[in-house]
Image 1 (cartoon, rainbow, N blue to C red):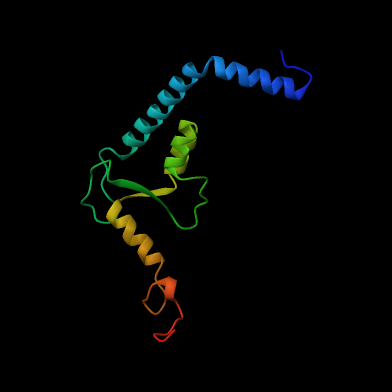
Image 2 (image 1 turned 90 degrees about the vertical axis):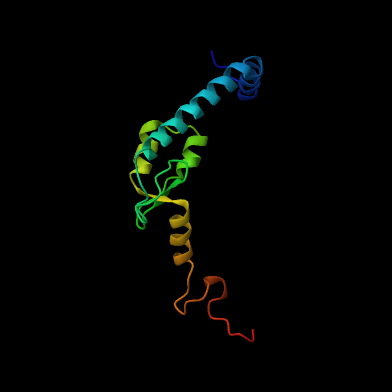
Length: 127
């Protein structure tokens, strides 16, 4: 039963966690492992959307499409133990591409109109 005094309640919760830390650590690890397997299954049997060559699941990455509202990256969702449904919904907003194509997409997004890197956009050679 909760304590009426908030500080007493917090201390009781901390003590309970200290007493059961091993159990919770094991359960958290198992949940994260289950989420990683879910993501691995999403990638298995698929190929890169861009190059159509790469198909190793460990090399494929989720790239959020432009215009889609990103809740979090898939890896953040796994780490934070989001529900399977939330992870699947976020994966539906993404293209599955290999790491090389993913780097190319982001490199293209960081290019200025003049073809130079965005970091130096608008700078002249003497600046």
